[in-house]
Image 1 (tube, each protein chain N blue to C red):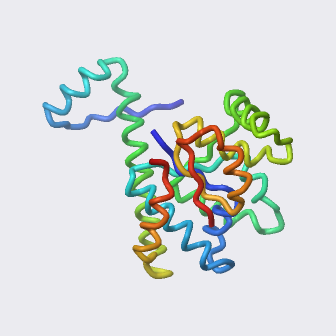
Image 2: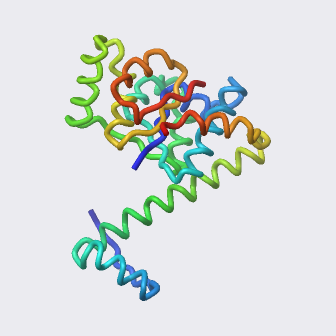
Length: 72
Length: 137
């Protein structure tokens, strides 16, 4: 798999917490998973907002009803 | 980590919103809860077997998958084993293989909810897994 090297700036305290959690070697994988998760979540929100614009918002009562179906 | 798993009817409802307005709204509601819970949406590759029919029907599915808000989960040996064990535990045969792969996807990712038009079979297959629930559409 081809990879791209990024240079990014991260808050010092956050960087220290991540490093103590995953170490230097696991850093790229950890960041890649986090970024992929966040990107997907962002695209999901964008998609759902587009559907809201096109078809109208889903009634909040229905969302609440469905939310109750998740495992506790 | 948990997941929201879509069965073929759920994906179909998203790809063809005008065919069943009520079902489309239910799937949207389920995906909204997934977003709020910070849970990813997953589609088992086996489900695509029921959706790709050719003759111009594939494009709507492809467009949906290309949006990037979900990932297709392939069936490897581990997933197949989980699904096979679910079938055996339920005393079911291979006619429920795709449903078993849908449930197995939730099991493998640590539980979550399955959006399905076939709550009976999914509930039966998930009976031993209290961390997997069913959202009926």
